[in-house]
Image (cartoon, rainbow, N blue to C red; front, side, top):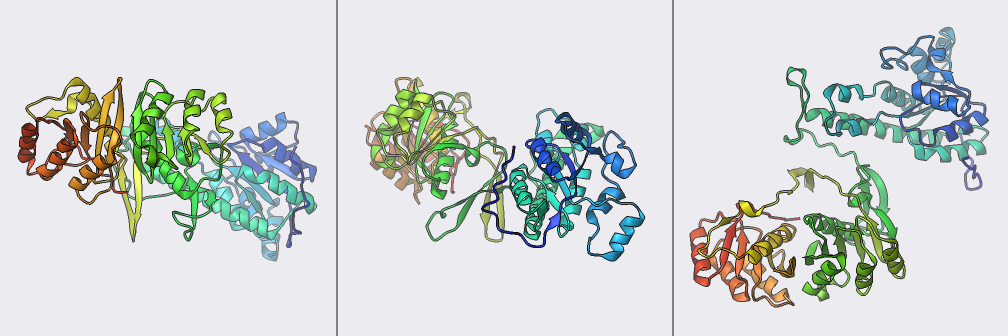
Length: 537
């Protein structure tokens, strides 16, 4: 039962009593409980289809919409609320004498509250294998029409589109003998118009990707959209943005997936920078099929490793750069167990993101009250959006993976089996390092490990030098990955002098021949990928 906590409610002004409510919802969460509250105030309940059935099964007295309209539901439910006695009952202005005379003449009963949520269109449209006819059938017509009618006439009608509002409305009605204030009706109307805007945008976006040659549905997501529609809703305000003088907030796409929708199990409130780093962390650690741990600082990895266990992967990632790891965030692609938690708890870190945590791990982390733990469900994000002044840049997400058989060995010496595995590991990490990027890595004990990372440098030679300078572990016998081609041989020479014996890079420079010649002179094995992985932001 919804409790009526009225003590904290201010006395609203310009009340409108709720005498008749029309309920027609797809999401029936909390429906029966809210309907019972309405009935307790003597509200006449009118409903449709499955909503009416759910209310009756709960023992509530409810009228069918056909009793109100005098017209049966028809066309498989397509036409049930599209009727003058519905929209006239919603739209007439109670203080307008002509309106009141008109509804009286046509025996239209006033509707003071509309409780509607819409068909889950995008869930249907995004379901693998869904047919074109089913997609079209799940476009709600009557629901949005009622929502817009009620929102337009908010001065007299309350439009309820969110389950989250049920309890709050019940409290206000209890405080005001079944009435709702003008301020509340206006708040509900603004929410309702946002709901219909997002709903229509979702339909337009989904249909834009569908072709129907010969009546057969073909769902294509190859084309970039002609219009960008961002329908994310406010999830929570943040203390500030990247810096304290910047306001910030987190918005959600409603998918319950990805970093934005991760479940925080403990710790302080997430900051803007925490969220950015966690996203970078999760993107990189998701590259690996085997257990992997990534430690991120300012969106760049300072250590990354795979291992037989999470604990082993963590120890190796930390070993790569223990100084930079202090105060970083950690991404883990497996459940975090007690052994891993015991190791990680020795270091000060801001946040950890993983698919799950064992009970024992949570107990160990529980002693670190400020440590943020996030449980995440993977999200498939096909597009990357970046705002620029005057517009938006959009591109496909960089999901390309290079396999061993796709490499072109261009040096006289081919990489050994161990070098080859290290090269592929380094290449996956390098993809997530800010350009210009050089990653030194090794493959030992059957697993990959970063050794030195040169990130975000203005020249590739500097990136090679910086990566070597950052190395704590020995560089002799490592491999190196470069996110873009070496424009001159000097970058390769720095890598070789640091101790790398094999290099992976895209190739494609006008001086490739010079670089290959330098590799052969230095005894370095070199593989071309034919793919560049710039990452600028």
